[in-house]
Image (spheres, rainbow, N blue to C red):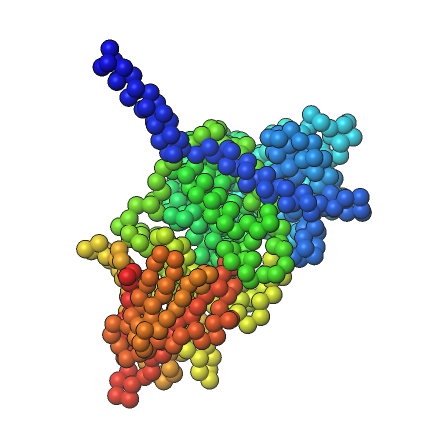
Length: 622
């Protein structure tokens, strides 16, 4: 009896312990979506206008305008109504939709106020169609007729205008889902046929690695160029939802293949690495500021691979770090950099995405799984992009030599992204962002989306010089030669090129940069060759400056960086150079991602008797 009693006690103890262990290895994914959705919709509802001419609109204090796209919040409101059964959400959804319908143009489109662009009609129509499904049972006859008339006009407009010649590829991809949904709703085969044509044109633009071209400037009639943020947060989920609605297995197969490669760009902390793409001027860390989000994509394919739910949740946790008073900011340090409430754009975009993810998720509970970024000791080159991902025990980095060139040149808005072998994202375990990219020159190509930030200096690590001819940097080298090597658990990326100006003209200084990663260190060796120019060249290394960090100059060749629980040594190991600390530090910040940095600088001068010089420096964990 004593033996049986002992066995019973062990059995009871295991029952108590084992569920806890299982719970620790699982995610209540739908509950997590609902928690964040409630937070975002609550903040948006507080900003909804009441009994005025613009009743139902959502006020943006940051922009001081009424964004028509904010009306897409009708769907998050409707989903929250389904979750909470609170009629305040239902009233908010209807009021938002009524305001949107009053803004509709005679041709069926909506302008993306305060601008004139009408391609976002696809986003607004899709949200109306999905919202109709959620709340139609509450409609009066007049409400049903008003919604149906408005949606039909918008679908007819998209049917006529939407194609790659009209819009960037993310709008085309979204429209595949929108027109497929409209075709099913209106029992209109022509809409579904158009959706299929657009979907097949979109996947035809995928490169061999699964990245979609079509976000940049026009080459003749169509666009080229890849952006990771818009791929993951717009295009792929649009195609995936279309495929599910129409049972198009060809498109579904392309999305599945692409997603496996895109997964590498979710960092261990959940940040989405859109640092290098052609629309990286809107990169925030959690994604892009005006695209929807990756949760809907991962939910669509969560049954295919258990890593997808983990990636979705990891990114959701990172997104939460950017929420201030219920609104999503432009990055981790938004509150420190901006004194006004955040623009509502990222909030309604991410809320819409989370609402779709909640509805498309087939299971309440998902198992946790390691992501590619959780494994250590690898280097991966994406040859169609000339982009490299590296992961060691303590570091993860993105190095970009992405070659896309906007045919519009300096007049285009896609030629100020990092390239030329730059580190566009450097993460350290138990710390987070160590370095990050920002536009080489901050411009405001879309005044609505880009806040004023006069005088800010680029955060991307770089080589540069200025002389009487102009400004030259590796960040303008869109023809660099990149190679990789891995041996003895060290990972080497070598890049060669010319320091160029914004017009792609070389100024007379070449560079060869070798970047070496180990478990405990990251090292750069930079060789400069002065062909013609005799300018003094600067090497700039900005480090993201979080509260509590300290930068101390131990000697001319050594800087100590202290942060919570970590200490780094940045040491020049060879070469005739010394560190310059904090020059123009107050200007090293950027709206996207909303971060500030502390700059360290080296100067290299052409020798009297020679035309080459090399400096090597190493960042080591102490």
